[in-house]
Length: 487
Ligand code: NAD
Image 1 (cartoon, rainbow, N blue to C red):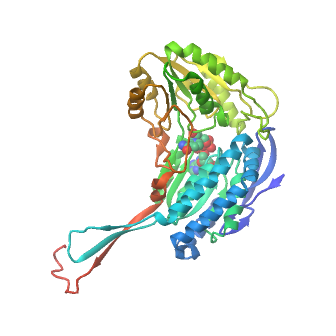
Image 2: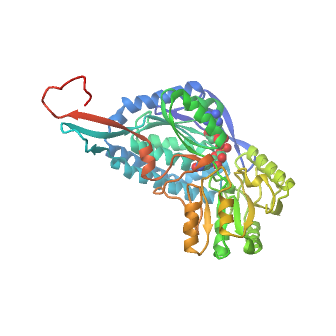
Image 3: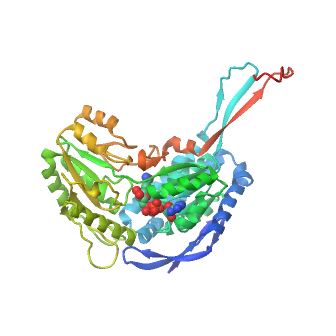
């Protein structure tokens, strides 16, 4: 068993308790992990508070902070392969994807390193002749970050990067499932030379560690990625400390294909949108909404591509779909597919758990035309695509918006004016036109409705980790006039 520690106040510690991590490809325990409970959460938050107000970090210039983040970015790039292998081992996400994604994580840190000394305050043209008034932008405070098991290095980078640029200190809670890469990443924080307490990385269970962290009285902001039900707990917990929240939640994202689209290209994008990362992606394009007159042609194309996918060991570079991260996830997906088939959905391909070890589930397509299938409403967070068809553009738009979620969407058409109408009409935080699943540190990312609020990526994310302070300076040497009149 490989042994991991967590990182509090610049020290690597064993934790209040220990628990095992399971390799999803074999279903066998492979790592021994530290579990933080209330005591360690408290130590971590106190360390972050000390670092924020009293330590070396609080005295650094923004440029010095930026240089530290650059150093971290270089270390991530240099260690990308090792981190990728750990993430693949611990979560089952295929090595082809983790190696590319973690190399890109370094670019996220580079982007926010550059932003550190570009966060500016402002001078106000105040309506009083003897006053100078300006806004200082200060770090929002101690930030609690809670992430789910899929892509923990990426989902934490989009929080840690902008929070560091803004000058915050933080406690990052890795998911109890697959936390090894994030615990290993703590070594890079240490090596980069961040002062003790600036970034603390722990792991533990949601109901104990996550809850204790999100309601801690010294936490000013909770940045959360995960499911809507957990988000409700977080919001209720934040009533204790009145912390602000940013919530990146799930989705049931529509993928609309018009008959005039390049169908081959759309089918490849749909495969990327639903089967990449074994469908464990918040932006999964899990509802295909296809124009009726090309439905059969498009489904035949998709079925062929889905059945040609190489399913296998996640550490093998040839593998395209690996196991799901947990047995819980595998059972949830199997049960929801069964329920959907019972409701009348037709299996186009896949749908059955293979025998053997590991938490595998095959790429699955459900034709739900004319059926009130639960698969059209509930998030699988797995490789399952639900299909409906339409005749008119208005119908396509209504189907796309028929969800409480609103994270991402895709539109495939050659018709420019129609594409513009849909960009405007779709209620989601991201609209990809003739592409899908593209991300960049420069572009904000986030949802509407049950997909959450707040944005990650871009300058806006860094500003969200700041708060303004209004400074009033009287420039007159005359005595203050009538004290009973507000000026
Ligand atoms: P989850 O909500 O069960 O868990 C996420 C994190 O919250 C974990 O670290 C967990 O320990 C913690 N947690 C659980 N209960 C808690 C509580 N009461 N208080 C505080 N923390 C608690 O999510 P999951 O099943 O691990 O991940 C899948 C979900 O995440 C899906 O819904 C998916 O769509 C979503 N997701 C969203 C994005 C995005 O950026 N929008 C990205 C990836 C995943």
